[in-house]
Image (cartoon, rainbow, N blue to C red; front, side, top):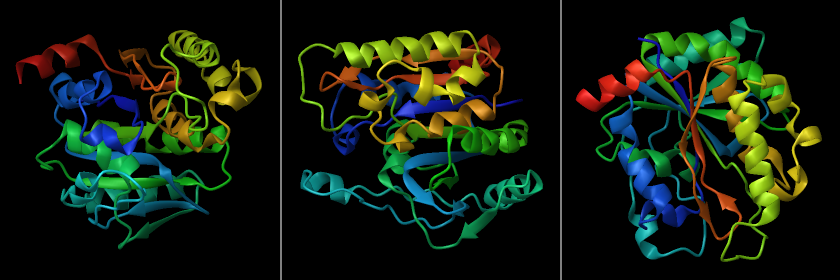
Length: 264
């Protein structure tokens, strides 16, 4: 069975200990999907010079000033070593420099959605970095190279943010500049306009306001590249703090898979 790929918005670290529409969605996510052999997660919070596969199991609390309960959370899933080695080989075969880091653990962009969706940590995990300074085309190419993992039971999960401007003042209603960007994203994905997606910084409305820096949007390129041209399925829609979109999407998810997951 070919697995879909996912893009999820992970929001603030407190998502892991609060009840919100987005956290409720993530808690119910695994039941909507075929059970994966492993989860291969790409997080906005890890950027290095070349694509790197992390095989450490440490739960990294890479945030400050949050409730003490967050720092007690631990996600001890075993590392998916074979998947990481396979992924490194696929990337190199595509001409993309790749290495394995035996020590680097999981940042909150990786473990936070996983601790909600697979709370028993019973699915092996490997994490892939973004390429520091890499553009949308580079990250899309990474995803394209990793597509064979889907036929091997691996679920590729890209974790970032549909919008991510943490300096925006909270509002009671979604900000117009955020809804305009998300509307463009929905239309672009629905049309399977992958070229438009890769060119987002030039064509999306209010791109610089929604993403003053690109790292929280770049993970979607990996998920989309691994399911290039396939159907995009909106999985969740909500906002937090007025402008932080928590939208999530699946790529290549079939109706048959959704029905099978419901009966597992």
